[in-house]
Picture 1 (cartoon, rainbow, N blue to C red):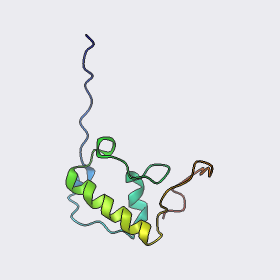
Picture 2: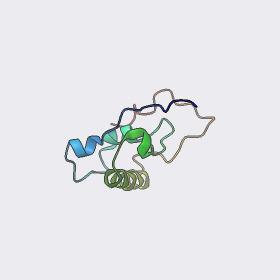
Picture 3: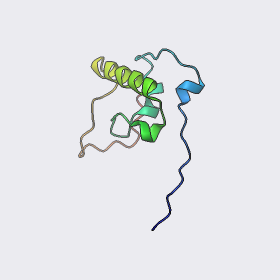
Picture 4: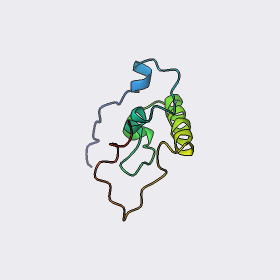
Length: 87
């Protein structure tokens, strides 16, 4: 049988910074929770706790509704630097 791989435990950076509120207008801070195609990254990749992941999901959805962040990028539309316009 193969040995189990041991992965480094990821910590929630929002818990370490003691963040209680996130603003949807700060689109630059959202880029760490979005993929290159502007999809919300899962908890297992970002290391966020459930509470902060839920807050991030709500904030990103509000930013999308306010047209600060695009919903998705098509496969044909190639974006060289997706987060350059988020400032």
